[in-house]
Length: 383
Image (cartoon, rainbow, N blue to C red; front, side, top):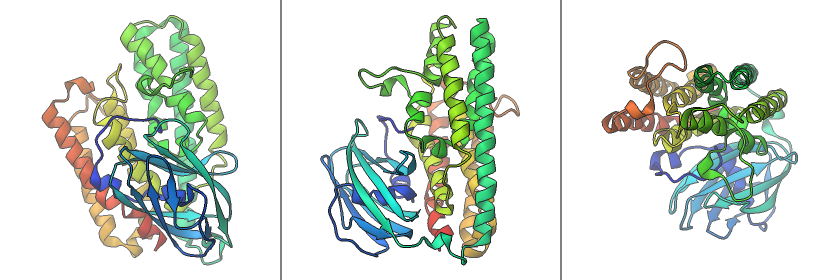
């Protein structure tokens, strides 16, 4: 999620390809118009400075260097406010190489040093005709995009259905049923979280943690229910929150039907899912009251692996070695996760409080092992 996290930064993940951050290259306005396919950005605690304010449409690469004293994140927003992409937890002194596919148009770039507040915004103009719109577009990528869109819609519907079950349990005052419904309802969301998060107004309504709640903001969404159900041990007063969650997920389900998805966007989403695991799930801070973190981890991993599976025909010819490496490392990661299962269901895992420090380190190492090769996925797709 896009709120601030007090977590470690993994160098391998920070070096990952996180597509849309690429566009952030224009956070502080000025620059020369141009057709370069490379963008250089320097981020400080006060601003983002880019090498250009205008780029040609198509696949673009950015080198982002954070010279500030705190972690930063960057977004590129469409005119409707939805995000083409984002990159979180870029640590001080780190440099990332990013790949993204941009259509012509006017974008708003947002940099958020410290990952709080509104940060700094500036326009980025993308000119020309996108390569992806040409007749030379790879039909295998088109097939992957169509299949992924269906997958995203299915997962959004899954979480909507789960939230309705959760709301029914809350309304009935059935605490045991609500505790069972809560983690199950989050699986779909966690599998496609980068797409869900691209709607910047919906993400904080649905998935904001209490630790990230800014002063003056009304706290809504899953984690309000989590706190009441698991910490307070009561459903009292939670029915309006549950109903609001259902309404927001109905909105999400409607929006994902038309959300723009590209091949590099799919690949970068897989990177973000693994980043989610390493930054907030491994630490146990995401599910602070229910301790159902492993359900989220499994869903993030499954979502990333689905992207690889759908892009398999493309990678098989463009970078077969990368595909083999990803298959091997995902298999090893899944084996570690399966060691914490209590059953075959997607939400059948031990509470994270039962995972020992050594086991957490083993899980973290397995995630790190996937993070580096998956950081090369967008570049391979765009090649």
